[in-house]
Length: 544
Image (tube, rainbow, N blue to C red; front, side, top):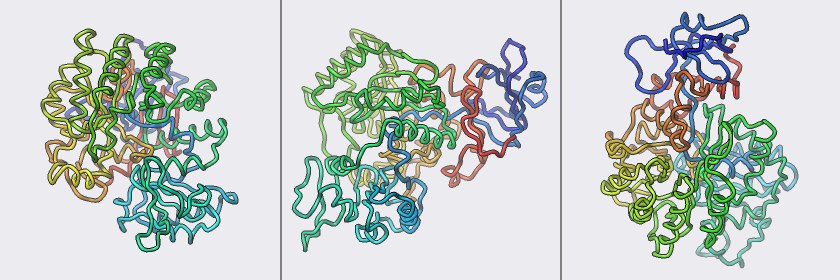
């Protein structure tokens, strides 16, 4: 039994399970029980050992043979942004075909208020459908003639019905918005309902009336409840585009009211192109690094540090200008000077090369090792840049956007390019700290088990296995990335992500054993009981 030196009775004991405390699984009988006191793990061991730590007031939970793992921590999610509209959107992350998707839309129409928008905004892609296509304008018109319907597949394409085009003020005479494209029938010139690019997406989403701050708060709480049901106990929010301080108010309100059940770690981004240094300097001036409490804490600067350094999905030609690199170096120096971690989006090796040059220049004056600088994605990173990254003590946040985009990426980067995208084995060999997440809620699915399936199998949603075996992960290693790996980003790898004496009692009791279930069932796993700091954050009611 592994136990703390304090022998006071436990508040709760969890018996008759299979406990993975983190790290390599031991040979022989596994721990079956866990003891918790004051929100922390007291011990794990056999049922008999843990029963000995109970007292007259200890609560007991029979795990009924279920697998217990440390609570999952999504290392890259846009949860603050996604939470504000979660309750007013549909999700297709688990939808296998077009009829099922349309049936969900039809059900939403039947309960919607007159003229209410029906929308699905990201988190899915047509490659997951048996039909390999999104719905058409005509199909959306047929099921919702009187409701605006907007269906966006990742950041790739969106489809509007006629009512949505009208509500957004778009007709055949409307010119393409900046940064967007309105598709037209090549023969008739009529709008097809398909639109492309952030300019077009924002034009439509901007036509939808915003909800009240109170509804945003309740919506955020609903999202966190759904994520707890998947075993998540923590989120590293990556900031992202369009995230000024006021966007955080619903989350802060939930926190102030004592209603925040998810441990949130926030990276702070620049909101406006051309204002990056000024806006990030304002964040750093008024917010001490790592300010907060165990539930909500500011973690760092990123992932949008400079708009001129953001290479999106790396599928189009891109280069970081000298001016953008100079500004990035200035911001990076300021962050290092103030002791702030930094995370920056970078897919292409050319982008990574310029970013590392900036960081190395800062490192000559202020050592970055220990400051937890990191890259998100790093899909195309070269062996040389892996060595440079390792020399800085910087990490990589892996996410599963390639589970949907692998076919498109291979078309852009060349046949066979996806066998080492990302080069996970080389990252591990270089000793680079690895975290893992989803990049949800729009660029990918919010389901952590889909992301873990991608890390473990190397497959994509279109059913094509692409990543070579050496760049896949064992189940234990993938879970390490999703627990202690993500906790590393906020200096918490010794207090979160493991079930050791003294760590936070954050854990999930799974529907099936994640170490034994067939690979194709991994994306369907969920939590029957999720505990955060010793408090129940989610339960299906099956465990007593």
